[in-house]
Amino acid sequence: MNVSIVIPNRNGATLLQKNLPSVLAAAPGAEVIVVDDSSTDDSLGVLKKMFPSVKRIHKTGRHGFAGSVNIGVKEAKGEIVVLLNTDVRPEANFLSPLLPHFDDPSVFAVGCMEKSLEGGKTLLRGRGEAKWEKGFYIHWRGEVHQPTTAWVAGGSGAFRKSVWEKLGGMDAIYDPFYWEDIDLSYRARKAGYRILFEPTSVVVHEHEKGAIKQEYSELQVKTIAYRNQFLFIWKNLSDPRVLLAHAAWTPIRLLQAMVRGDFAMIVGYLWAIFRNVAK
Image 1 (cartoon, one colour):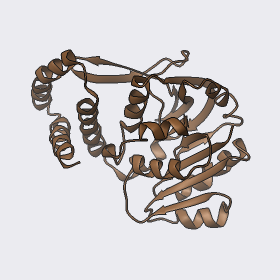
Image 2 (cartoon, one colour):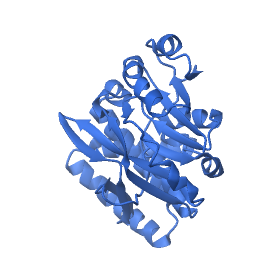
Image 3 (cartoon, helix red, strand yellow):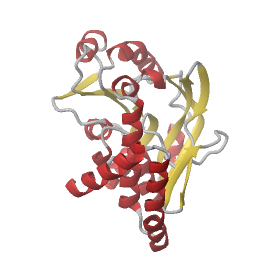
Image 4 (tube, helix red, strand yellow):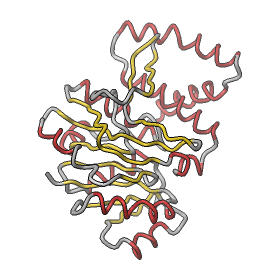
């Protein structure tokens, strides 16, 4: 089973130097592609000098996560495409437990166990749970002892390319980041494909060193997350009962946000309306 590894990059020269050796060592023989999202640092120079075997794709216009990943997957030659963030370092043989799942043609994606380094602590992540509640799609971190998951994270997961193409890949309406992987997984499950979590495929994820933390404020991140939550709901809502609940609860949620001073939700909502109309 041929494997390609796609790594979206934005000003990650230091992270590439640190983590690419682990990627290459953990996946010998795999095609590795770095899609550079108009970096202003020396990312391309580092790749050319230190990692000549890695395929480089340089975008002259900045798009974001989904746009970058879609370009990389399109160019990938592997049947299975593994997505890794620049701040992710796979442990040895992380592919071995992932690939056998794809012997089942109904499996679209398999997520990795993330040893997430946050605030000096190591949290185990990678499995998510989600549900529709009062017209909103809410999600949370799931316990990592179960094989199923609501979505496979775009920063550390394996995807079947043929199904990716059939589903149209990630939706760039969510750029620059967040909810694109939840949306893709949701559409896959709705189409009848299976989404799995493999706890023995382990990666180390240094969240605080990634491009999002370096380039966006906490308020900006929160606003974008709210915006994309609304975009996801409006795109995927098909049950009339949930639609009615969303119509009833949205003004209540917005009023509650105003009372508690959560203006990121108000701005995110208005931004989602504008982005939805403009798409």
